[in-house]
Every structure is written in structure tokens, then in C-alpha cells.
Length: 150
Image (cartoon, rainbow, N blue to C red; front, side, top):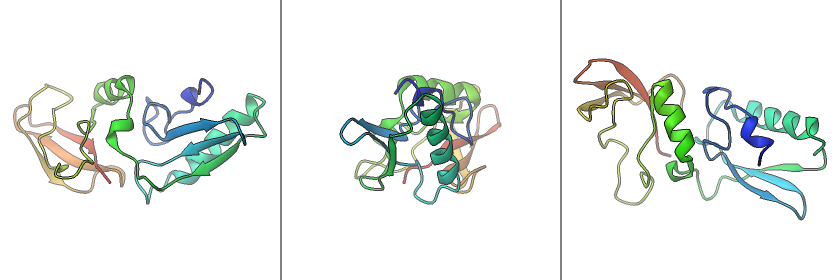
């Protein structure tokens, strides 16, 4: 996990694949790393796998396989507290914990990462990457990305 905690997400380099909860498990027998991307159609999946492979190889873990698991799907609950802080500081609003739970909707108010207001609204389901939506703060008027729940 220490090696993987230094592998940045290719689209948000301030957080690691561990911070985002992409790395689900590290198994000893057989040696493997289980990953689930934040979005099932993530265009960065191949880059993430390649970056993890390089980090493992460079750390003398060439025998460790990478497994992609789509079930259960990634949930915002897997983002670490440190990852949530890094996202916020970078200007991206992470979804609240439990957003993937039945009955909770991604359209719940986001906290503006710039001014802290909860007077925010989604202005487009399509953000800078497929896993994010574009939101705007009604207090400071600034736009910001927010992770979608899938």
C-alpha cells in the first residue's frame, strides 16, 4: 500500500489512487492488487493500471498482478479523509459519504471548495472529466467540479 500511495491519479495528480479508494485490496496469495475505478467508463483506466504496474515493478513487486473489479462499484465512502481534504484544497468537492446508498442523490448540495457555502447547484452533469459534474456556488459565484456517484 505504501508503494501505491505514491501513484497519483492521472486526472487529479494531487491525490493518489489509494486516496481515491481506487485500490480496494492488496492480497498476498496470489499476490495481487484489486482496483475499481471511480467511474465504470473511466477513460484513464489503462493509464491507472499502467502507472500502478510501473510503481510495482520499480519497487520489485513484478510478480504482483493487477485485478480490475467492477462489483461492487466504487463508492465515495472509499475516499480517504486525507483524499477528501486534498480534493477540497484542489478545488473539487468530494461527494458526501454514503452518497451511493439507496435513497441518497448526488444532487444534494455540495459545499463550495472555495468559500465553504452550501448554497450551490449543479449546472451540468458533464464536468472536466466523465467522473465529475460542474457545479456553481451561489455565494461566491465560482464554478467547481464535484465527483459524481456511479
